[in-house]
Every structure is written in C-alpha cells, then in structure tokens.
Length: 431
Ligand code: GDP
Ligand code: IMO
Ligand code: MG
Image (cartoon, rainbow, N blue to C red):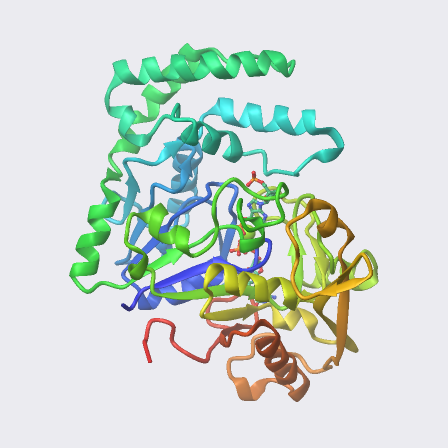
C-alpha cells in the first residue's frame, strides 16, 4: 500500500507542513485527520510563505485533492477566512480540490469562549491552550451534543441542537462567571455560512475508498505531535485529540492497513509551546540561541516556543507508541556553530535512571535528563541538498539519533524552503 502518514514525534511544530508539501508532489490526495486550527503549518515555496491551519498542506499544489476528515474539528468561520487568505496568494480552492467530511464536528464561538474561561479558571495549572476552542469542541463531540457539518442542511434540527448545546454551556459559563452566549445568535451565524460550507461537504470515507481503488496515493497529514496526544502525551498538558498515526485511519475513515508508511517528523532539537513538562528545556543562552536561530515563535498564536536539547528517549517512545517507520529530521541547520551538542538518552527520577518518560505528572515534573555529549560543527548545513554536503560531525549526530531512537532517518530538512530537503528513502515506495 503506497500511502504515507506524516505525524509529529515531539510537541508539535517539527516542520510537518514543509515535509507534507514536499511529499505531496508524489501524492494524489492529502488528508488532515485530527486537530483543528490550533495547528500552524508553514510552507515556504520560492520565498512565498503560506501558514496553514485547517487546510491540508497539499492545497498549494495544482491537481491534488485536499481532504479534511471527520477527526478534525472545524471552525467554519476560520476555515472560510483561511480559504480567502490562501486564494489571495493565487491558489485555486473549489469543491473540486477541497472536500470536508460531512460528519466532522464544528467549533462554535462558544467553544472559544469556554476554552478561554476554563484556562482562566485553571490559574497556575493552565495548559496554555491556543484558545481556539479545540478542547470544548471535542468534549461536545464525545458528549454527543456536537453540531456537525451535515447538520447545516436541516435548519429545524440545527436550531434544536444549538438550543440543547447552549442549555449546557450557558449553565457552565454562568458558573465560571463568564458572559453567556445567545443561542439565536449562534444559530443565525451558522445559517449565514451553511451554504458556503456545505458545498465542500462529502462522505469522505467514500471519496478515499474510491481513490484507493483507483490506485491513487494518499498522504495523511497529522497535526500537533505524539507528546501532545490525549492518551500518550504529557497529560494533562496535551491537546484533546489522538495525534498518533493510528488516528489517521479513524479520523479519515479508512482501514488501518491503508495508512501505509508512518513518517515521524522530528526536529533536531526540541521545542514546546504552552505549559507542561519539558526535561531537556534550556533556560539559558543556548536555549535563547536555538529560539532565535530557529525562529521559534508559534505559527498560530505567535507565542515564544520553549527550546531545549534533542530528547532521544522521548522520540524513541513516540516511535514505539505511534508505529513510526522512519523519521524526517528537520532544522539540523539550527545547530550549526555550536561547540558541543547534548542528546538526552534517559531520565533520572527519584535517584533512578529510566529510559522512558513515565505517565505520572509528578514523575514527569521531576525527570532530569541524562545526557551524552557530541562534538558540534562549524560549517553551515543551511540549504544542503545532499548527504555528501554535510560535515562529518553532523553526519555522526544524525547517525547517533537513528541508533538511539531505533528508527532510520528517511528525509533530512536543512532550511524552510521546499527544495532544501535530502531524500534518503522514498516513503511511498515499499521495499
Ligand atoms: P509544523 O507545525 O510541524 O508544520 O511546523 P511549523 O510550521 O509550526 O514550524 C516549523 C518552522 O520551521 C516553520 O517556520 C518552517 O518554515 C521552519 N522549518 C521547517 N524545516 C526547517 C529546516 O530544516 N530548517 C529551518 N531553519 N527551518 C525549518
Ligand atoms: P502544529 O500542528 C505546537 C499545544 C498548545 C497547548 C496544548 C493544548 O502546528 O504542530 P489546544 O489549543 O490544542 O487545546 O492546546 O497543545 N498545541 C500545539 N503546540 N504545535 C501545535 O500544532 C499545537 N496545537 C496545540 O500550545 O500546549
Ligand atoms: Mg506548527
């Protein structure tokens, strides 16, 4: 099966957008399967920058079908704004090349208000969410009171569902001391966008089944990263969806065997935006240097990302949990010029060395990294397009990462530009 799933192996922002865009030249269909507009995927093509939140990264290439699966939570207003922004960069977006799942749940303005009110109520225990309403929208979906794309067709049912949902939320908002939301206002604004949104709606499972039967190649585009997964991440400092590769099947509507090769996008160091444990975080000059050189500011919220050394124990865990077959190592160039580079191989917790991050919140908070140190390199790797262009110390660093995480490097990225990418093994080709 020549399909590929791209997922983040750390805490998001590993460079998934760039790699999906690069790989999409070899695919026919690109599918988002979880998350929402909390994601921010950056593509740089000939100096033009595209920041995508909900639209699959294949949208910029002509002749590719972009699909938003039912595992995604869709803010219809954010989607329409994004479509306009991308159209302004001369990209064609029509129901011919964009399809959204008729059974996907919607994010409504009340979800954003709740997200922000709940964060404020958490005080010191804040998660640092993107404030986009992702968590409350997934809660509604699981609670079976969510409003879905297909509900936009039936105005009476829609009204009933909005009233029912708001009965619940206005009680909660009142309890939180936040302003309540008028159900009529939500209903009216949904009616206004209903027609525009539903023109893209389709049974995605069927679109994908037909694509598979026609021998088309599907590229599944994950958002966030394994350590933000609601089951396998650093709970409760996680997002509200499963970000692992198996979610590609559920969130798109295909069988598990259709997922194909699992490519884990992995930054050559570590970043995290928002609160939560981060054992290799560097609150010093090196961390600052990585942030500045790597331009580590959030694509969605503009927040400064926390930076630290590469955590091989964490990525090894992601490789196992998500079934990663190989990784795309990104931002190697950001490490250029460092005299020495540390790699975390495990943690010291309560005086004991462990080779994985246990689930307990207290244990995660206490985890101290155990490092091994490698020589850095002075030469520039920025924009390198062949393995032979890399200095010996950089090659050694990449090889050591492969050993420690127990997965091969399939692709290497050396700048934000689409073509500054080194292919070691084509993930679409079985061998
Ligand atoms: P995503 O959420 O995983 O798609 O990643 P983001 O787009 O949020 O963040 C990754 C950032 O790194 C973007 O600004 C990319 O343009 C940039 N980037 C991706 N790959 C490379 C690379 O190899 N080198 C450098 N210097 N920047 C990169
Ligand atoms: P991409 O796809 C990095 C983080 C938030 C917060 C936590 C929960 O660009 O890699 P949420 O709004 O999802 O309830 O926030 O998850 N987060 C991300 N961090 N990259 C992302 O997406 C993220 N999406 C959510 O910062 O810590
Ligand atoms: Mg991002």
